[in-house]
Image (cartoon, one colour):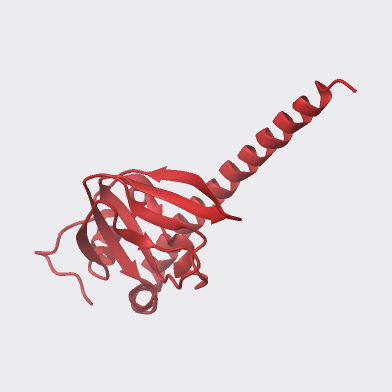
Length: 163
């Protein structure tokens, strides 16, 4: 699936702004641009998911069912990526990702198309993989900080208890 000059372009926002414009243009041709209405699922928890999407317009919510409780994990806005792990490790989705605005414009690349991009252009592919790895590292740091804050909050509550 090669990129043509008349194809829409990936904007220089979010994680992909770190890519050279030529790499973004090539990568864009391997994916598809789509508009989804409110309530549409991009991924469903526990089901196979093998694609990464970039939010171009609109808002997505990321939620998961944890032992019967619905937990809000994130709100994604233009420039954010979702599903980047699935390009590297094809497991079941760990959360639901749902359009949470009137509509959402997305660019989505399937794992098979991403693999084709990597095979055809490994130099540019390394640049894209570095961006994805950087995003994953950022998410890990955010989650670690969040867990640390939660532990500190629980510890403070415990210390405030009367025995």
